Image 1: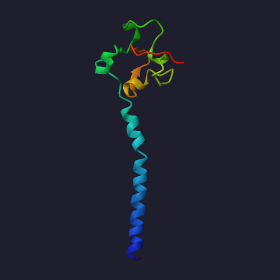
Image 2: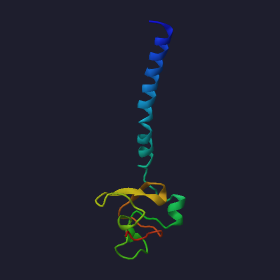
Image 3: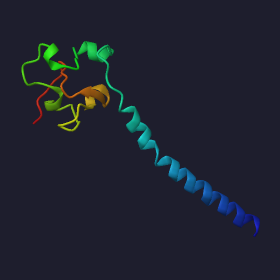
Image 4: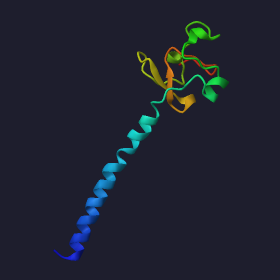
Length: 102
């Protein structure tokens, strides 16, 4: 085996490892999206966010589940909210930015 074959093999091995590692990057982003928004978060405070809509001045029936900003499953307890950078909010929660899903 000559030097050019060895270098080519090393390059191909390194490139394949790099591709494999780069496929894990979206998983890292997903993990950060799993953080629950605390009611003490500055944005949550500014928007009067509560984990339980019954503890707010929200009209009956308005919860994160039926807000256009909420992208969690209908039967989930927590789901991502675009307002909070896709961190998790309580499905039964509410904030003053609530807007009906179309």
